[in-house]
Length: 129
Image 1 (tube, rainbow, N blue to C red):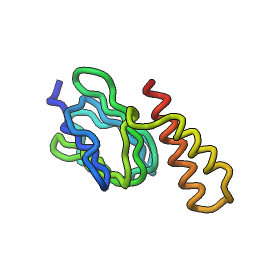
Image 2: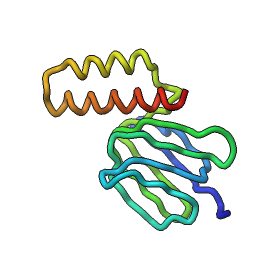
Image 3: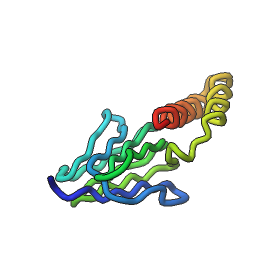
Image 4: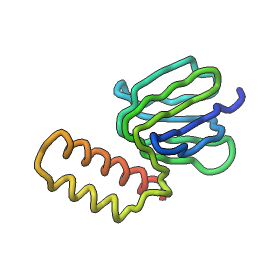
């Protein structure tokens, strides 16, 4: 098997996770993309969604990301997100509360975006339990 991919998951305010992986999966506007060692160069726009990072050893890492870009080149995958958080950092009760609040608000672009973000956070947190 080829050398693992070097992964950098970065939000605008911090580096969320860095390490090696044998698989990285994320959601783009063209669909879900899976990256493995030897993947061809790629640049993609991210949608709000889940990121899966599968290290060579140990448990999978789940994260929620909200818009951004992914760049894959020369054995490196960089995910640059407006915001990102690991599943372990998400408070499920707070995520449920924010989702209910977003669902109950007046329809608008910002309400739809808030609902989508809250839904992604909740799904990622529950999936990793």
